[in-house]
Image 1 (tube, rainbow, N blue to C red):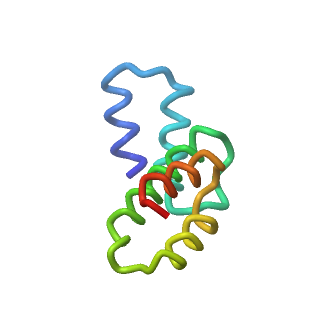
Image 2: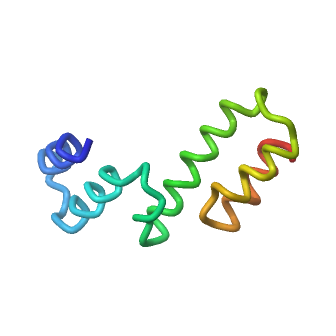
Image 3: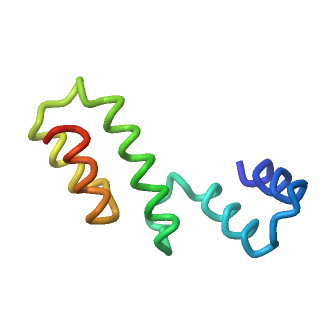
Length: 87
């Protein structure tokens, strides 16, 4: 969680502004309405891709395409997911 991330980054002498950003993203990584910049969008899309890949055998191609359109925040994320998952 955020507290653990902050502790690790402080021990590694990471700059305060980076710590603040990482803590924000870690603390909100399940809340799409909190996505506020490209770095968070990229993390979100990577997490969605991982989830879709894990579940792809349970979904038909139409449902997988719909999930990609609804879930990804970036066009490049959607394109990568379609290519990677073959739909």
